[in-house]
Image (tube, rainbow, N blue to C red; front, side):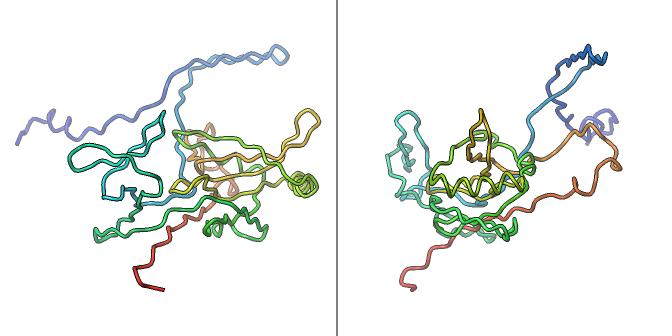
Length: 254
């Protein structure tokens, strides 16, 4: 054991936190005489997942690890001898890890076929029921609190159908400045998206769109640094329900 104070200092020194990328911001407004020339830093924002299946892993029918081969879009299972065999999506098994180290086979989430929206439903009651998504309405401005998946990013989708029914809904959303809010699963599995549906007016036309997000943005680096400048309304954070995978019944159980 060393008694060198410099050696001891090295051991207890914490790793320096990354401060972000550097850039220079220059802005001028001749009308007001405003001129800004300042150094800024920037970096990716963290996202707190809205819905997730925690502690669940996917394995092949023989207990091997799964790998997806892009291009040919094959699903492969690793064998004990190191080789891989092709399997189908239906062959994949899902296991949830217990606190005692045990594994229980569970069913994946079904692809969402029904969006059941209720204005009276609270955020924490939004969840998945088989092929149905239970959703609610949120203020349109709340969408700004959501951010993309770190890897996939946010995606935009059009919504089309009965023009009279959708126009009625669109008028309500526009008048009340609201948006649809619900979980959504595109394909059977564990990936659950946070979806928001709302109205957009472009070029004189009305469009219903759906945008998917990874979850709620973790807000950092505020320009107003004093606690007094943060209002009570800004401190409120949406509490998002986290669906639990349905456990499969044991063999023979009705």
